[in-house]
Image (cartoon, rainbow, N blue to C red; front, side, top):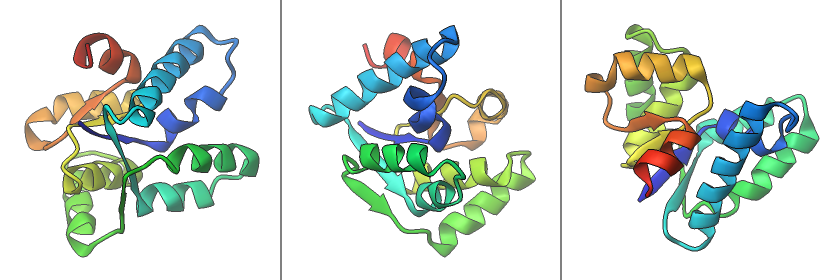
Length: 147
């Protein structure tokens, strides 16, 4: 299965682990990445992820996330069709960066985009019929999808 983890999901293991939600989502993300390393799933990396990481003010955290992304088996450059799809998703109410992550995940034919962003999850649920990728929280993925 091809998976696209957005930057907030990839950052979760490096967030404050004293917060219960962060700790639980971190464990789920690490379980997903473990399955990627065992080649059960394929991780997709995009130019959009790289650009977002390049703009991250916390260089240490960005470098840790970049090290995780080395396990990606598919690296997707941004294309005009992805940009157009992103613009169409913005017109449906998605924030630009979220729309671009969805467009990349769709272009890579990912089954799931995994995120910890509640606003993105709500919008994706409301627009599920318009999306060609499932958008789920990492806990949902490990407990309900990837059994």
